[in-house]
Length: 245
Ligand SMILES: [Zn+2]
View (cartoon, rainbow, N blue to C red):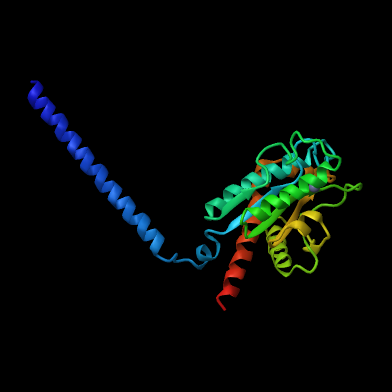
């Protein structure tokens, strides 16, 4: 019995090996075709392979703003940043994160100007990463509870930063409105230090009880992330269209 059984097993092995080779060849061929074939959709041409740097504002010992019921800006920015990362990757966009957890970039190093040093390192990380554009996420807080709505900022005089911020703001208004806020110039260190088109998104007001509640809701965080991702895609598409003119 041992002889024939061995042959049968061997026969199965041969079939399996042949099948594996066939699958491998097919996969290799399709991968090769995917590489050499130009993408059909203009959007994928415009965005695939681009690198977007995402900065979740604050972190570690720096909680950022504290909401009316105690929510921390650093937690909200991180939650939205991680969702934005997923959405961009689904669009075949590479991402670079300044942080992916609850920490800042000055860990264990006492410094008299820790926040400034942290911001300097975030910008350095972005500039060294080969990123094509940069988005920093924050949440607003004001003494008055009446203000609400997301708002995007860019460095005054930076044409590409303005276009990026306007694309993101438009998407935020369309998808999260009602919101009459427009993209505005602002002299912010992280925007100044970034060497690529950069925008800073204040995703909402934590001093507004309703907005603070929404910003902690994962479903709403996904909607904010989607709006920002769509704004980034719109900016990249416009930039790509310009480069082909
Ligand atoms: Zn902030």
